[in-house]
Image 1 (cartoon, rainbow, N blue to C red):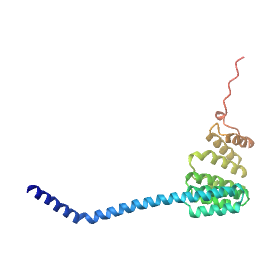
Image 2 (spheres, helix red, strand yellow; image 1 turned 120 degrees about the horizontal axis):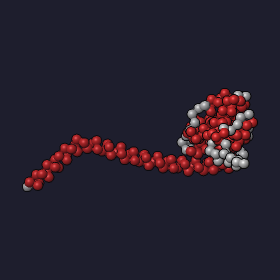
Image 3 (cartoon, helix red, strand yellow; image 1 turned 180 degrees about the horizontal axis):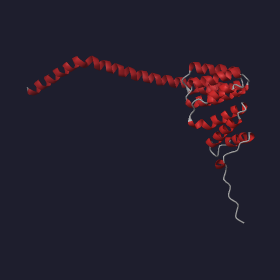
Image 4 (tube, rainbow, N blue to C red; image 1 turned 90 degrees about the vertical axis):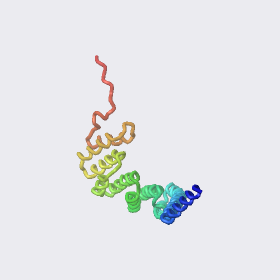
Length: 224
């Protein structure tokens, strides 16, 4: 009989607990299940978007290979509109910008590069800014190019940024500043980077020289 009374007391306590907290528990369960379902749907949606964007990007690659600028711009625009959040959108914009530049369609090239600057991740933004600065250099928009290059860049792009600054400064006939930029670019490059030779040629062409501690060391001559 004692067991029955204890069991009845537990049941009564449970009923009281459920009467007080049952609706809250149901609500929490519904929210949790809903969140889980939404999470699965979102992941599925992202995978689906990536597959669709990949197919469009393959089409873009074909148009780039054929140097079909008009088609490349159209496909890149579709990818950006429908799949803005994917990496394919950033890659498509950079590819379309290159084709536009080669077709002397500088307006389209700048628009595509600016899209990456506005919407890309840090690395793609850096690439787009460097290329956009190059387009501005060709247009003789030197101040705009330097303003872009003075923006924030990831550390790994420091050599390329200094190199491009040197190009713009030479175009402005600011030779002393250009030398400093090229020296900084050379110093930031790994000794095995083939771009080092080009920077050295640019530097020497404006009367500069590579810092002594950055040159390949030569063995001292043997004593007579």
